[in-house]
Image 1 (cartoon, helix red, strand yellow):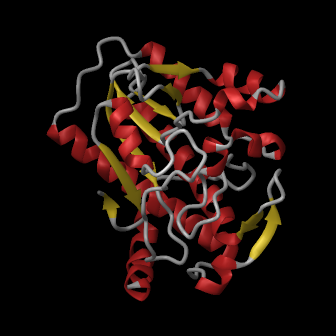
Image 2 (cartoon, rainbow, N blue to C red; image 1 turned 90 degrees about the vertical axis):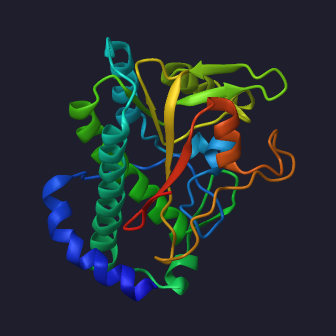
Image 3 (cartoon, one colour; image 1 turned 180 degrees about the horizontal axis):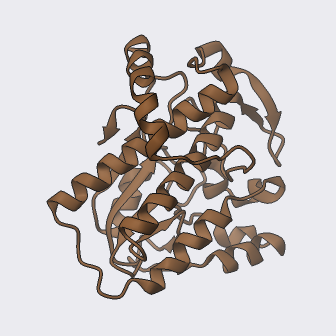
Length: 264
C-alpha cells in the first residue's frame, strides 16, 4: 500500500506544485499527540501543553476575519462541494509531498523513523517524528487552503476555529483567537479544556452554522491508519471519538482528508 501511494504521489507532485504552494517551513503547529496518526491533537484537548509552542494563529486569524465579509454567500451545491473536496485533497497531498521532500529528500518515512523521539512537550511527554511531521504538514495544508479558499469562498470558511461545547445543554459557543491567546498568556488554560478545534469549517458567514467540517490526517508511515482521535480518560468527552463529537456539536457532516486518498 505504501509503495503504491508513494508512486502515485510522485506522479501527482508536478501537477500539485503548480496549483497549491504553501511554504510552511518556519511555523509550528500547536498540537501534539502520542499517536501514529497526524500527531496534532493534544494541545486542543489539554491546552496547557501549548505553553511553549508557537501557534499557527496567523493563518487562522486571517481566515476568521474573512467570516465577517461573507455577505450573501450561498450554501454549497453538489458541484461546489466536489470542488472543495478536490481542493482539500490537493492541499493535503501537496503538504505531504512538500514536507517529505524537505525532510527525507522526497522519500516517505519508515515506521522506525516515524517512531523516533525528537523532543518533549511542555509537560515532558515525548514528541515523536510522526507528531512533528503531522504538525508541519498541517501548517503547510492550512496555508494552501487559506490561499485557495480566500479566492474561491471568501468569508465562507474558518481554519482552526475553537468552539466551547456543552454536551448536556447542546450549547455551542465561539472562542475568538484573541480570547484564546489571552487565556494562554494568563495561564488560564483550564478554560480551554474540552474545547473543539476542527481544522476546516465551511459556512456561509457564521461559523456557528457549519455546512461541513474537515480534518486533515497525515498517517506516519504513509498508508497507515487515519483514525479519528479517541478522547482519553479524564477528558470531558472521554471514550468518544473526535469526529462524533464534532458532528454532535456542529450538526453537519464531518470528514477526514488524507493525502492522495482524499475525503471520506
